[in-house]
Length: 75
Image (cartoon, rainbow, N blue to C red):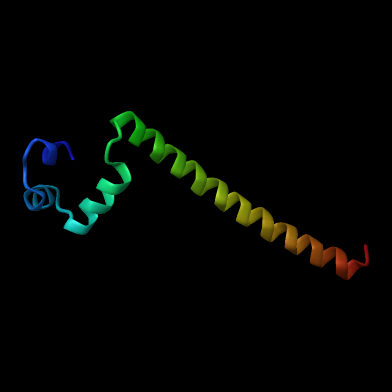
């Protein structure tokens, strides 16, 4: 985005970095106006969120199995 701000054409930027125009504009809407440290922090939070979602899914499945087991045992 800094390259575009410096006057470089979007098509040239996309070609240089091997991305499509649509990808550029998605990234611009998502990360535009952010500093590098903010982008890094956002990515870290997204990774943490993904891990937490996976943990939640695994624990929910385990909980469901335990409930079925207890129901069969009559506990």
